[in-house]
Length: 79
Image 1: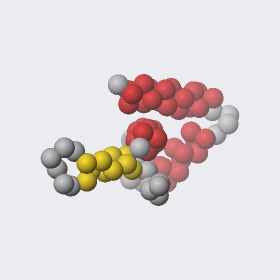
Image 2: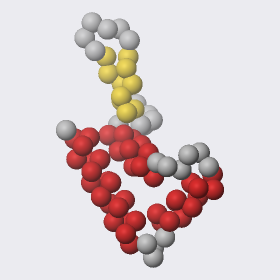
Image 3: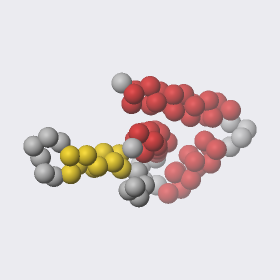
Image 4: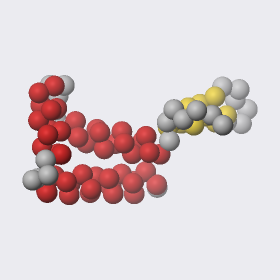
């Protein structure tokens, strides 16, 4: 059994090189993360404000938005 590093290796026909393919959960997590940091522009303060807003239990709209993103990327990645 290989250690879990979030990637799977496979060898294509006729190619001796191994290609690393991320697990589906890693791809989904990355897609959600990119949505979270969209528009933050590298500012640590803006990122913390965004994360705080998205995880605030009083902000039901943002929680619903995260659920929609999760469903969106789950459906898009399966295609």
